[in-house]
Structure formats: C-alpha cells, structure tokens
Length: 70
Image 1: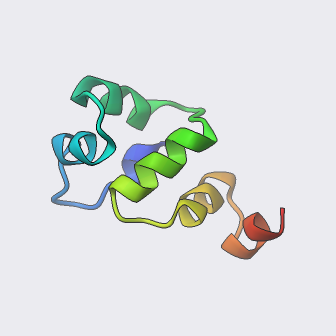
Image 2: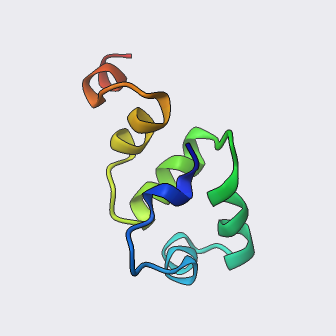
C-alpha cells in the first residue's frame, strides 16, 4: 500500500507538500514509495489530517490497537 491512497480526494500534492514543508516532487516520490520510513509516514499522515497510527496500521494490515501495543 502506498501513501497516495491515504490522500483525501480534493487534497493536492501541492497542499501536502506545503503542510510538510517539502518540495512537491519529493512528496510525489514519497507517495509512490513501496517502503516509506516511519518518520515519513508520520509526517505524511499529519499533513493529510490522518492519525499516523491509522496509516501505519493500514500499511501493515493490522488494527490500530495492535500497532499501539507493539
């Protein structure tokens, strides 16, 4: 699962880049990465208004409680 799937409809890459303080091209690469780092996932999740735990749990294919207990 790639980060792009967590970007809400109507939110552009430019919006995410501004929220992250990153270049648009950098965010585009992050969104398509098959193996993003935890720090990247946290920043991206916050930039699109999602819980980092929600995104990490979805990437791992587990529920949020499992991630919290890990």
